Length: 143
Image 1 (cartoon, rainbow, N blue to C red):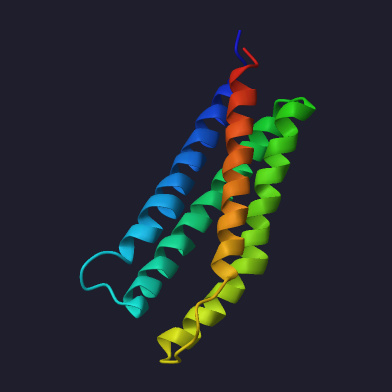
Image 2 (image 1 turned 45 degrees about the vertical axis):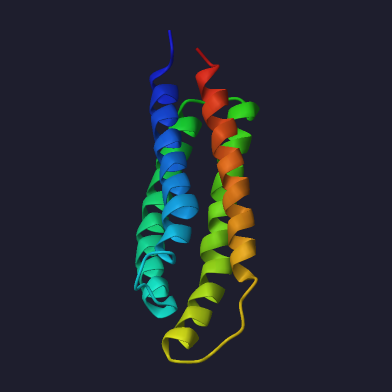
């Protein structure tokens, strides 16, 4: 029989993955292409959206980690959980503060050259997506 903790972890993992894909790889780039959306407006919207996403991600990370560790999962399941959580923490504690300082300056009217900080965030996001896919597939093969 498929363990309850694994079923919960699968659901949480794929909800988390879906949110990251929808926001980071669909909403974020598209908002700047909408008519009338200025850089300042897009940054303001983006900060609100990513703050909300990151709060939900943190809750989902805790939930999936608890499910996996309560379920006494094996290394092939634990490793991607740890990877996803570490990648999220890197985004929240290292990259987001830099991006926020930069967007504060732009919103204050400074004219700054394009930043490469977003590439670091996107790279971490891609790695997190890979970890979540690995986790989800690993959990699905338990049954």
